[in-house]
Length: 320
Ligand code: AHR
Image (tube, rainbow, N blue to C red; front, side, top):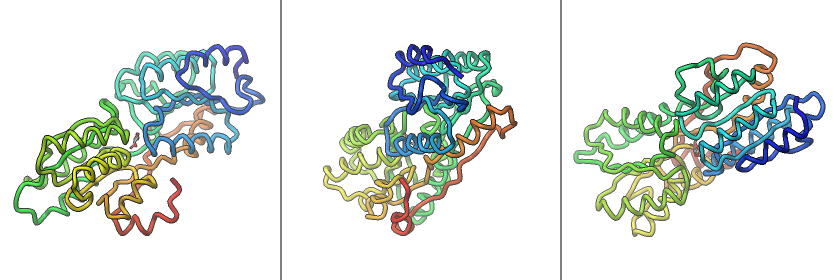
């Protein structure tokens, strides 16, 4: 547990921190969890933050929350602050895969267990963290690609695909690209003619799609690594006088409400789900690692896929 003074001093350096409740004292005997979030770049991220905050309150865990505004340096700073504050457990969703070994070693040396949530790191030393809770992003990309292969099986000529990648160097961008690329190799007609990062944001998706449309007269398919970029691209496609979902088929990942609505409305064609509701499992894991219990090194989130029809059916009860 921490001392009040330490908390206030430490958080001053964080990008955007909030501790909620009786933060700063560690209060009673509550487990204290330091959580470094990527940012607020997408609907998925907002739903994930809500899930983490609600689950912490529900589990009686004191949450020290930091928003890194999509910058690795802010996450490293936040983790160092958590170490200085002697939190019980650190969890974080790494904005990019590389460059974490030093700070993770510092947490290990301080005896603070670390849980990776949502995104992985590429550290060779697996002892630097206790577990990784999150999706199989390669699988999500593969499911998206397999749908397209089936959808275009009768195509006799080239099918031109443009790809909106997520944040450069992030696990979901790397893995979704890989899974999609492997799956579409099954049909030689399928060609990625342009691929660029839109940083997982609507604004990024719109701006990059505008460039794609200017540079490429024939685009048949858009694969966007998340709903938000797909939604931004929708605006660019419509502004260019094309009909999204028909002239250009749109495949995305996430299945947040706005994406599901676009799918149900026939503007998107397929979504591979990525669930942001990781909060309850994260709190369970935090309690276990704090108690010194063994936990599995990898916990994969259960997910599905949606077509226009299944999106219509799922929308009324969709939680996020
Ligand atoms: O890491 C999960 C990804 O990050 C989601 O697919 C995306 O929307 C978010 O920004």
